[in-house]
Image (cartoon, rainbow, N blue to C red; front, side, top):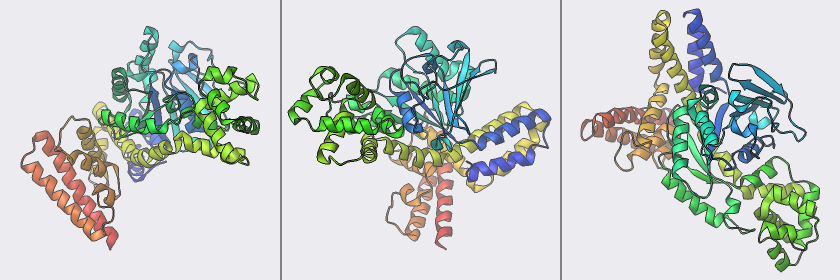
Length: 490
């Protein structure tokens, strides 16, 4: 799971591990080992925002409990393993193994008081976890005092619980219908504890969750969800890079294989009802449970827990239009209607690419800290770091730091320049960086040179000291981009 930058840092660690003290050598090995771990994405948000349901959808298995219990009040890490296994890791380092419950989920009771648990380590054979580790965090904003205290611990006051969160390269923050002030504070607190890039749209996205509840009944939520997500994205422009609408329950049911052939047949029975009768049945959950219908109470409750009213209505519409529709195709359409594909694409295209630079930056920070604490190893470690940073490839780390400062407003830049810097720091596509989607290599090289000159002129005339430092970093970044475009052209 290493990219070119992390591979270089891993090589650096290998070269110095035998030249430093034994204590420092152990730390260097730990840093090197971490570079080979899969991308870690932390799922955060307020209590009952649908985080665990989203986790299950991303994993492709219903394994994270969605009802409040002991296991929802602690950090839980889901990673790939050769066999399913749960370890409850306590604050003193002990591990207590547990089996999955009879439904294949993390047990509601962990056998250890939540206050003693550092995190729950869940290894699963899910292929989706081969290159992705998902960290489910407790609710970060609670209406009860005890819950709030636990949430505060989870985002950084409690070192043991925060330790797992600090390993995340990316954050997915789940909102409900409206962004509240404590959502923003919780996200900022989470970033302070967890992210190498602090509060930044560079490594965080938002999810507008439970969109299937926006319209009531079985109404189509997307005409409401899309503009609301854009509104939230604008409100949180300095905190998350995008806000993606998702119907997490639909996604969980489809991705975890929870819809059976019998469920499909039950939905087909509903779809055959008179349209007016079906429409009345789907106005509310109470009506769906109590109105006369050709399904028993158990079948109706099962459909509600898997699809809710919007999903039931959507599935019935698909089956009414095509009564021969099979279970597999119906599940595929439900997944598409959930919006999960866009979230998955965002994680794949954004976080996975950036994780190479973020991990490398994290490793260099740890090595610098090691050099400051271990006098016997100081010169060896610092010489190695300085040698690595002379490689132009590692200018990406300086660009990410500069983009983070601009994106969070720490260092204000002229209108439009901030976004240009973020594009430069977070992409390797010159056409996207330069906003020239149809340009040929010669035009791209020329535009990169012009951008480098513009940033250099700003650095020496009109910028304050902080802006000038960022401008010099951007100037070199565009200069290197022009060189790369020319090299690819020849």
